[in-house]
Image (cartoon, rainbow, N blue to C red; front, side):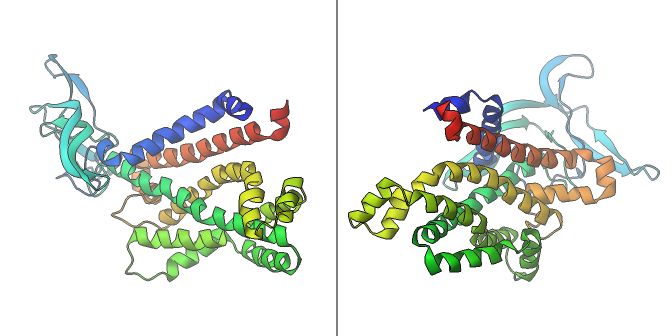
Amino acid sequence: MKWWQKLKNNPLARLGAVVLLIFYTVAFFAEFVAPYDPYDSELNASLLPPTQIYLSTREGQFIGPHVYPTTQGPVDANTGAREVIVDWQKPSAVGLFVKGYPYKFLGILPLDRHLVGTTGEGKINILGTDEQARDQFSRLVHGSRISLSIGLVGIAISFPLGLLIGGISGYFGSWIDSILMRFAEVLMTIPGLYLLVALAALLPPGLTSAQRFMLIVLITSFIGWAGLARVIRGQVLSIKQREFVQAARAMGANPIYIIVRHVLPQTATYVIISATLAVPGFIVAESVLSLIGLGIQQPDPSWGNLLSLSTNASILVLQPWLVWPPATLIILTVLAFNLLGDGLRDALDPRSIQR
C-alpha cells in the first residue's frame, strides 16, 4: 500500500481529490443544493446582480440574515445599466433546509427541502439571474450534472474498447496486429474538434440537446480508443513473454481469458492514470461545443452554454457575474483532474514505490 500512502502525502493530489469530491457531491444532490428550479423565471428580475444578504434592517435593528424583494428597473440609455429596485419593507429571512419547489430525489423520493432558501417574497439569487430571469446558481448546479458526467461516460466507452483491442493486437500479433493498428492510426489522424463540429451539424434537429450531445459522446468515444490501444499493445507485447502468461498458455487457457484475466490487469497503473487525465478532455469538448451553440441547447443548462453568454459584449461588461462562475468551475475541474492524475502517476510509478 505504499502507493496509497504516497498519494495521501501528496498535498496537490489531495486538493484535486477534495475539489472533485465536492463537485460530484453537489451534482448528485443538485435539486437539494439548488434553491430554485433552473427553468423557472422570476417576475421582472432579468439580469439581477447577486443578492446582497443583510443582518440588520435599515433602521439598525438586528434580525439575522435576510434579503429583500428585488426587481429590475428601466435601462439607463447612456450606460446600458439597469436600475435595481429594492422593496425595503419586506425583509425575507435566509435559512438552511428551507421549503421550496417540490422535486423527486433520484426520480423516486418526493421532497421540497433545499439547502438554502428564504421565507417570504425575497429571493436569494447567489449568482444573480440571467436574461430570462432564471436563477444562475441553480442553473450552474444543475448544469454540473451534464458537464461532469460527460467525461465519465466517455471513458466508460472508449477505455474498455482501447484495452480490449490493444490487448488482442499485442497478444496475437501477426496480421491481426497489423490490421488493428493500421485502423487505429487512421482514426488518430482525424481531428477531434472538427469531427465533433461536423457530427453536431449532421445530427437530426428533432433530438433534444442532451440526446444530441450524448450521441456525439458515444460516437467520439467509439473512435477515441485508438491512442490508448496503441500504448496497451506495446505493454502487452512485453507482458505476454512473462512466466505467468506462458504458464497459463501451457495449461490450455483460452487466449481471450489470458488477455482479460492475466495480461490486461498488468496495465492497470497506466489505465488509471490515463483515465484520470482523459476526463478533462471530454469536459472541455462539451464546453467548446456548447459555447459555439452545437452542444447542450437552451433551456437545458450546462457549464458550456452558460459560458456562451460571454459572446455577448454587454453581458461581459455589465453582468460579469454570469460569465466568471462557469469559466472558473471548468478551470477548477480540469485542474483538479490533472492534479489527481499527476499524483496517481507519481504514486504508482514502480521506481518511486521501490524507493
